[in-house]
Length: 295
Image (cartoon, rainbow, N blue to C red; front, side, top):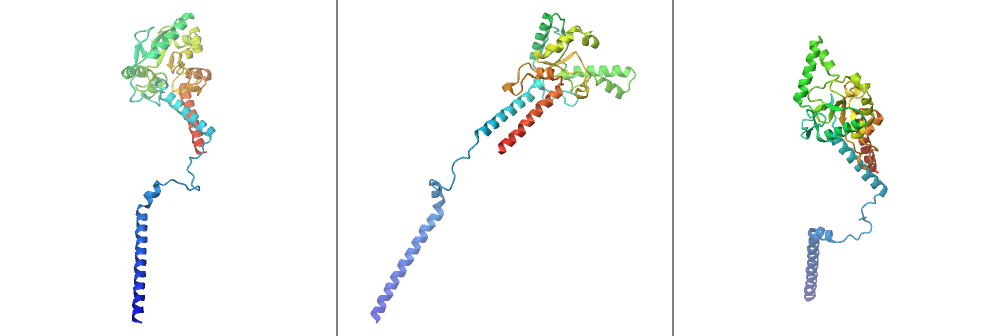
């Protein structure tokens, strides 16, 4: 009995040791997996067929539309950021960072300067007018802030001397002359042309020259800056002498079907209305892009 009991005890002891060793081994390997498992798993290829690895399929037509809209918006931004499309009026002063450094004498009147391209293009028009039998020259162009200030003060004082109050004088002068910092002439892109510097407004309107200008100057990139019947929009009375260069080339990539000057001429609109038109087209393109990207 004693021998058998001793043998049984030894057997149980060995079994216990083996069990404990097995448990410890399992615990050891399990611990290694827990602490190193994620790195190992991350390196393994994903063979699970239930997980989609491919990028979502994009409709080619929608993608093409998105790219076209982005390009359209880019074109509008380029138009609106061009100095030739800089809008200056009573509500839009000359930008503080604007500095016209590209100036040159005009050929028909060396005493007057314009932005270089504007000077070249207006001379091309004057030459064309001469070939058609009309006399025409530059009578006014670029003005510095100080030049514009002196002109405004001179006109203002003239109204005061005529018996108007300061408020009345400011209102009257404001119909034809801009305050310094708010004048188109400070850009270098605006020019006045006529047969002579003494030509009156009525003489200009009733002349064959004005008819020729009205029908042809847009071909050289110029627009009538202050058209008749647009005072509520431009802030100034109709001025048959004053023209603004906006560029004579067609719009890039066919976003618009004609040049800026031609569109303004054919639609009989003001520069302000045209800028609003371009901004509206840009806004519409942005809305379409937002819709397309959400599809």
